[in-house]
Length: 109
Image (cartoon, rainbow, N blue to C red; front, side, top):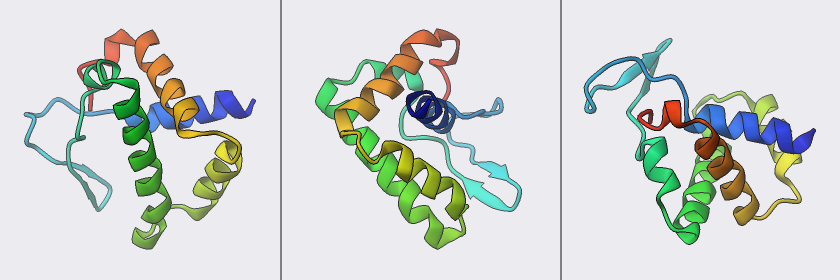
């Protein structure tokens, strides 16, 4: 259950909905500015395992400090509990598995 929840949460964040815009256009979610992602999902799958782990670590670090900017603390507490026993390789593989299984989203940030 924890693995499934983590997979869905991380994949949703990584492959989040991105409306049709040019690559330099920001998205606006409510009143929050969200720039386009650093990588497209298809590019993530082509990274080396070490780079995927580094990306996963950076993603999680960014999520956990996002509470300073008003992110939902309850959701991040739940994520923290869920991944407490996982190492970066596991988390990177969860993201990678989701990306591999959803080629229709490879063009998305």
